[in-house]
Length: 87
Image (cartoon, rainbow, N blue to C red; front, side, top):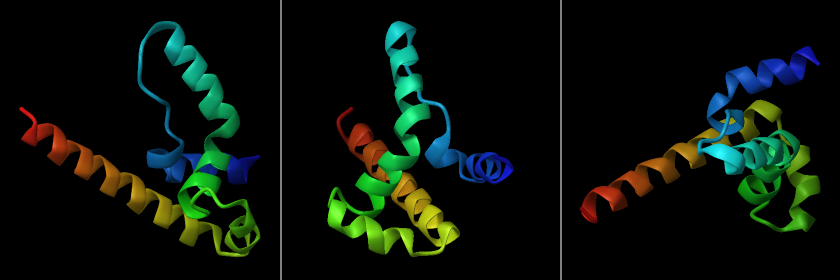
């Protein structure tokens, strides 16, 4: 349990709480609490290909989480650039 908590705190960018309001936030929070780790693993690292999960799970956990943090930060920067150009 301590290992899980430590990972969540160390990689808050990936496992942090969602944003939103009202009931949608509650549903999002429940979904993220249940599936956040799997979504990161499956969608982020395995790119939605279930056949890649075995290879991904053999990698060092910090290597995987660092890569996921990079992908999330890159996505946020790109979204910010797109948003600023649309104004």
